[in-house]
Image 1 (cartoon, helix red, strand yellow):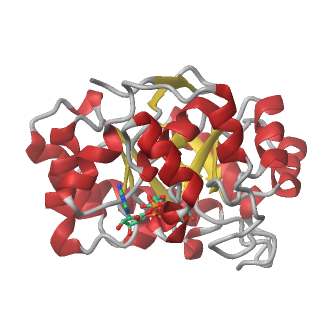
Image 2 (tube, protein in one colour):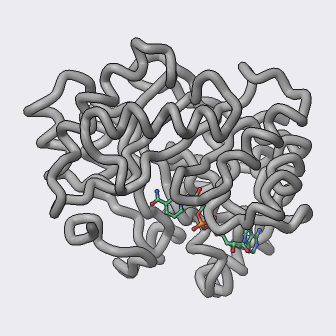
Amino acid sequence: MSAPTITLNNGVEIPQLGFGVWQVEKADAVKAVRAALDAGYRHIDTAQMYGNEAEVGKAVVESGVPRDEIFVTTKLDNDGHGFEAAKTALDGSLSALGLDRVDLFLIHWPRPSADRFVETWKAFEQLVAAGKTRAIGVSNFTIDHLDRLAKECDVVPAINQIELHPRFPQPELRAYHHAHGIATEAWSPIGQGGDLLDDEKLVELGKKYDKSPAQIVLRWHIQLGNIVFPKSVTPSRIVENFDIFDFQLAADDIAAVDALDSGQRLGPDPADFG
Ligand code: NAD
């Protein structure tokens, strides 16, 4: 079974379920990405900051899966903001990955105190035409940051990758994305595997659908239209997290997961960070 795709605002298609590699050690990364590709994943989410681009690229090449069938995302490091610096940084990623282009390049954090994300985005706008990435987007941008790009730049980001899970579902930002043709990527989709997965309601829904709490949460994202890329280095969990396309949550069960919203972030508030 393959994951469904979502068409981005520039026509590029992205698989809605991918594999995230934040905190995957170099020593484990090739094996984990190979396990994900073997399980059917065709979308890998890495970043310059994760320090494992070389291993991701190695796994992609060694897998034997045609390059065009795998969607590869990387993200600009926080010290790469600036018009020239951003372009040079993507060249560095391509060299580390051993690829001649990525599918998606994101500004990892807006870094409002540095206030260079507009200039950085103007460089990003040129990277698609240069053939170095098929799509461009941002991550951890608030509505204010997105409004500034809309006022001062030409290209609308294809994606905003934000913290989003049942405890922190970000309805306002999702509505803004929807109104402006920006796809929503949800980071830490299963709440970093923490106590969210012990929630009684998720355990109960797991029994009802014969799925695990992690699968219930991932299915909730898929039905909301979010793009997700859970992380694991455990082969059985890598397979489990992909096995969510043979069932559908009923509307009242979607509402029951919605009701877990507690406004609880796992990461920093991007309006203050950096
Ligand atoms: P996640 O929600 O994917 O949870 C990962 C944790 O859950 C792992 O520690 C794993 O042990 C556990 N887990 C995985 N599958 C499980 C299962 N089936 N049952 C029980 N536990 C399970 O959290 P994440 O890694 O923080 O986020 C996923 C990806 O999002 C990252 O790998 C990265 O690619 C991306 N991300 C981006 C940003 C950003 O700032 N843009 C920030 C954080 C993460």
